[in-house]
Length: 237
Length: 302
Ligand SMILES: Nc1ncnc2c1ncn2[C@@H]1O[C@H](COP(=O)(O)OP(=O)(O)O)[C@@H](O)[C@H]1O
Ligand SMILES: [Mg+2]
Image 1 (cartoon, rainbow over the protein chains, first blue to last red):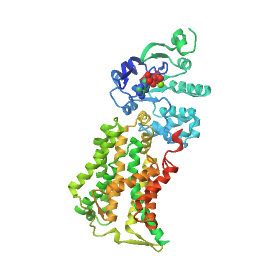
Image 2 (image 1 turned 45 degrees about the vertical axis):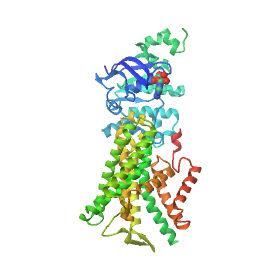
Image 3 (image 1 turned 180 degrees about the vertical axis):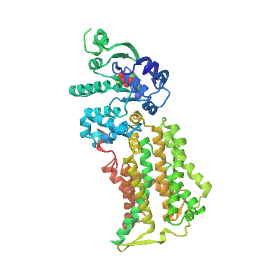
């Protein structure tokens, strides 16, 4: 087991928003988490990365607790997140953003090889490498956010709504890229508004509602489930 | 014309000092969105540490020539950096997640603490940098104009340190991390950056620069007192706002500009109105550019 979340409770101030979440992620898997706005998806992901602290429960990475260690140490383990809303460093250049993705790395030669791979995946970033990232289009910023995460050579790649606000063509491109990243053996946890695309890509999925997991199954089974179709795939009941 | 150039050089000299201090305000604001009101006192501490090391202990005389002073400058930087580090740990970090106002009160408390500690150790009278050789006595004729050794020292020191800082911030990995933390702390954490470490570092770099500025003022103007951080601090803070608070080249530009305006205003308008003139310029610039000269690049807004 690569990642295991056990009975996770998280609060903002005195308001609890996650009420005991359980999740398991195997090495090499693609997991998707579905849920309406406000269900607690982002909160779950930020807690995995250590930006939020749980009030109860635990998170294990390869069997070792990570909910007790600071975020920068979690990143060192290879748990890397593409946050909601991209969060590129706007006043920094594209290249600087990418190098920041490799901040914890000590292997310069490997960084350069990774950089080349990222530029292969996103040739647009190569064209604009000296540009300030705040001046990129939304789609380019998303590519940069993903590329920056890849620079950290993730073992577990966490993505929070990477296709939000992108054109259908770009969404398709992003999913294709994610597929090729997954093929290299990287484990992926994906939160996506575009539930159909996410379920087609993922091997398993969880459905989160009001801070609780209400369903978890093989992705194909979730795709065929009438409740899921009704709530998340725009189908009729 | 000669008078004008003379005043311009004086302005650049004092402006360089303002810029060095302003960098401390602006860097801390950059990463914490907080004004370190005790920063002026760290500048004062630099002047007093310099006094002790250079005059009382005579370290500058053990090694002849400018090398002795450079060694003392290095020691002053290290000592004031440690003070900055302690200041952050004691006065700011425990309040990181509380009310903005609490941090301001803590800053003012730290400022009073430093001033009283200096008074306790050195007394409240002004102290004199009693050097065997006084920088004020020497000057260098350049193209028919006499440039005082103190101006050369002040301009040289500030240019060298500003260049060093600029290089560090823009060309090193740690410098890049500082810029990332200033832009988005949460995202910086997701890159594996230890944000606390970066903040501590900023609280060492700024005071180190301010401390050297204090030493330089002692060396060049000869007299220091426990209260000097207030006037210089206020000017430097003004300079940081003028350049756009949070912006490093802005603080450099703002400091130098303020020094020049002040010096020319003093010479050509009125010495008594020197301070009023600088604040008038500040208000004028803020009217047209509320974020300061270099504040908030367009890219930040996208
Ligand atoms: N910073 C915050 N402070 C207080 N409440 C928050 C904060 N962020 C999110 N919440 C609340 O927590 C719940 C879960 O939010 P979130 O994890 O962002 O959901 P999702 O990502 O599934 O849309 C929501 O009710 C939201 O209003
Ligand atoms: Mg969300």
